Length: 97
Image (cartoon, rainbow, N blue to C red; front, side):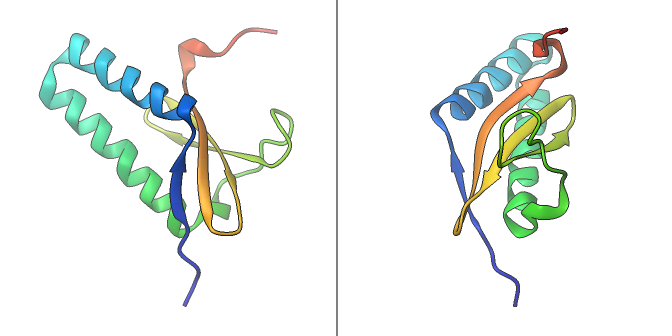
């Protein structure tokens, strides 16, 4: 049976998640905010089941991986027992270099 990882959110990622919900609530209302929030939680659950499905993001930070959910990039790393979500970034938050 494949290993199942536990989910860990960094303080920054937890703040990102709260801000995403608050933005969705203000823009589109409770029902749509709940749907998007639930979609993110289901995505986190999928990451815990198969964290190596998504590509490395070593160019961002060594050891990080990146997955997409809706309009957000989820940056995470995999430890021995956990998928550690480090940041959830919307496309508007990427800086041009």
